[in-house]
Image (cartoon, each protein chain N blue to C red):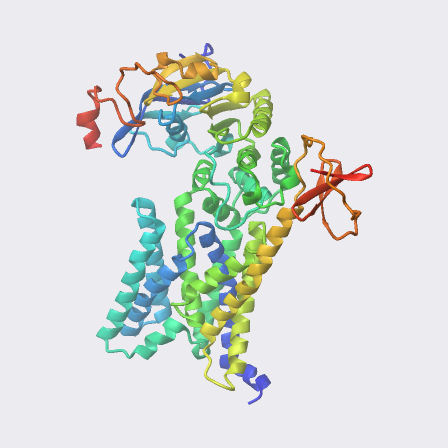
Length: 334
Length: 277
């Protein structure tokens, strides 16, 4: 079967739509989680959703909707534990983590369900998505993206500085719970794509990648969504082509592709930050002593290749640990 | 001591206000009214309760007893938050995701923005003005985390300014800020004062802000021990305030050493009631 024929198949097109929407929704809400330093919240909710899926499978109702309900309950519970108790956010997460996973395995065991049906949700199965699933995914993903972009100013203020937000008259608790609920919904959206155990990767890794190169929140969330779409659609395509040779699951491919983006962006981020620091103008102020440097055979100039940094009304040339400023016929050490 | 002009409603007033943290009294029966246009400095040593007082005034700390009134309205019913500008103690200017200076300042405009509406021209102008006043307009695109501590403090002040409030609460804006940045801060506050803003400022030491202060309130151990004309920094730590301040050396001091926030052993109200709360 040629690639063109393969991508024309309905199940493949459904998979592409689901991947695209997941790639948009997960990083959008993930940015707010990372901003609040709750990067692992998606993972915690993912584990809780395992219980929901298991309940859905056992009771023969929709596993997706059961997962949505249980995940939202779990997310709100995490938020309450975090707010009420003196417990740290990460401790609250850990409690839910293990409870959710253990509950899911226990419940699915009661019914004698084989592990394979639960596995579809644990590790994703993009290619078995039904038409109904795609519609549910679309509705939920659009809701997540719409709310997290539309309410971005409020959510940003609350995540940035809760106390200030409260004095600004924002309903901080409402927005915190909203973020938790949106995270829960996007977990269930991403469940079929990358699976519950890898769901957090799509919420966090594109954000971590984006912030290597960005300086503002808006570009971070935008770049994270672009990277999320690239990773999820690209991962699906890569997995499809690779499946001519071997069995390649799309879920892990998507996550690994997202991580590969990070690996590329990381050194670029380090390099660009270092460069920005080097080129920052020196603070104004007089140089305490007139310190002429020793013989200087080299003439500095715009094209001499040395780093030129503005300083007051002139330019210092930085090389080999020196800052040289032209002074008459010689160079001063600044 | 209140102001002469008793006919005007105080911008903010706390009456008989007590705050307990973990069952321990931190503020005890505080009575304080700040008249519109007044510049009040809350002073005192670490742990004297001055930050807690400001946090109680803006509603971040629940009162165990007493009442706070904002422009005459009890705090629970108050919803005119655009009249309030709050500058929390620093360390929160940067978060897990980079944010530009402009974005942080724009968050201060939320008090006047409606849900799901884009920024209006007036919003943008106010944000720009706020950045101009603190002298950071040219750095608005930079990440907040790249700024120095003093500059981050100025960003937080600009954020409060962006909502164009009339009553400011500043919690230790000068802590850990170098002198040039403190000077910029003083100029900013002088501008606000000349526009008629009411300012409540928590400070350990006033430094360049001293000439602006109309009235000083000194707290010690959760109680107001001085309320009157502005004091010089060294006066706040005078022995007659019984200040357990570490910079002072009293070799013959016979008074028992006291740790911050730990109540007097001699105070009869603490032991039986403190347990119950």
